[in-house]
Length: 249
Ligand SMILES: Nc1ncnc2c1ncn2[C@@H]1O[C@H](COP(=O)(O)OP(=O)(O)O)[C@@H](O)[C@H]1O
Ligand SMILES: [Mg+2]
Image (cartoon, rainbow, N blue to C red):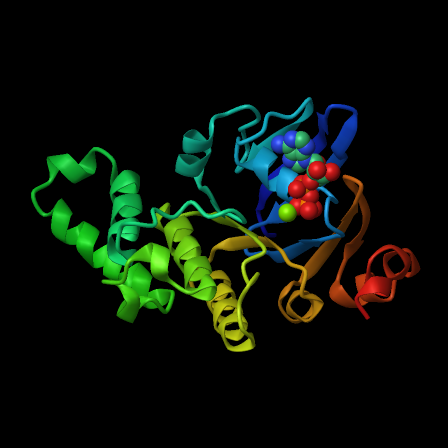
């Protein structure tokens, strides 16, 4: 039996009077590659913010790998094994691509970086490995702020991987990408899931991407789960058609 890696119970978050998430119950098992979809304002990014400690829930709990991480600060949650690639960029624009990833790798290595003499080499090797894995090897010396939108998204993904996550959260990973970049990025997402054993949850507006890559889909609307299931189940669901797919197909 596969291990449950994430268990969310009764998660509520309001901004003023507005329920961004309402009584969310949700789980992920090791090896999942699942998607959360829903109209703008459905609560997808808020849910990711709650999972990663950027927002505190009004009520509810988040268990990761059996550990209660509700209300833990972001850096602790990253250390425990959840990384997130941001919908809003957290790239240092004046540094090179290599330096950006190098500093994230260094942060992950923490104390070990200072203690061991060969840590600098290990850090450089790991940085180069991650950049090549994410298709940014040739862009290493480029200034991050001058990258194309698609390459910036790739860099965000690389930064998220520097934390060595067990669970990777991707908020609209292909937003602003060309068709070619979208294919490359989703190919990488598939490989990270299958070959590197990373459990992945992503949000995405491009429904062809969702239906081609997610094994299980959750539809959020006004902060609540409307339906959850395999792509075919969700696609043919009448409520899903009415509130979301109607405007896309
Ligand atoms: N920091 C915030 N302050 C106030 N309202 C917010 C904040 N973050 C999100 N919201 C509101 O919560 C709702 C859900 O937003 P969000 O999670 O960003 O949706 P999605 O990512 O699905 O588009 C929206 O109505 C949004 O305006
Ligand atoms: Mg969002």
